Image (cartoon, rainbow, N blue to C red):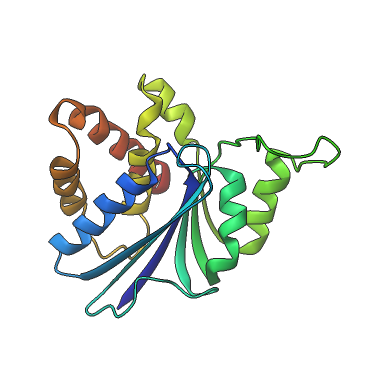
Length: 195
């Protein structure tokens, strides 16, 4: 058994933290794990992609184009940009937030949020749209989008990592004063997939 995950978004969204927790949870369940990150031009606001590979034995941290089992997108545009990494009939978990690029020519017509979601839906039948930004705002903290998405990932069909391992990894990687709200966010994300 091997699982290759791509986490895609922009700097400041908690991608590195989420991929760390994912890998820690996998190790708690006895998997071999490798991780790699690719940072864009700016740490905050630039593209960030993290690769996480889990198996009984993992040789390399990088995932080949068209081989990822799942893409976890922190916003729609970065998710579309990462689709080339997904294997046929792979899974996409996407936050339905659309961040308009800040560095584009005014003469370029940008695709709408709905057009981008259609591209994702047409790429694979296994798409979980999660309104993580809205859920985070309802909990009063827009910094917990990443743990909402982690909860969604934990509830995917055939996820070999145990829920308790995700929760334990969160307790070791997050500050204690933020743990309770992150556990709430994690549960909201789980329910968005299980419903």
